[in-house]
Image (cartoon, rainbow, N blue to C red; front, side):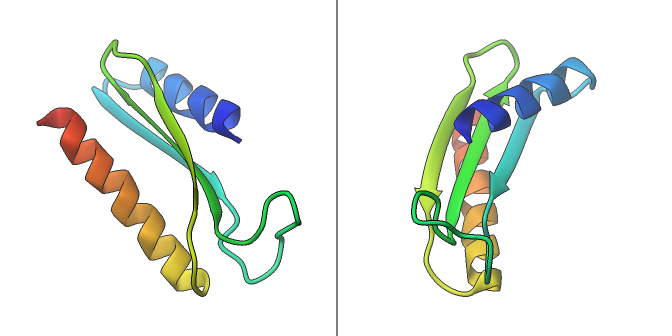
Length: 84
């Protein structure tokens, strides 16, 4: 959930010397999905320094590797926007 990834990213930054944190949780498949949270559902949170945590839920399509690729791509895309 977005709440979980928010706590994850905030905890990671609290415990490290990093300026940027990213946390991801989701269902890449092939199993594990439900009607409420189908395969491809991914929550990502970003936090840069003391700024507010950004969190978003996505529904990616494809097989397990495609979902994982899209997740990493989106996580890095937003991270680059935040630091620029």
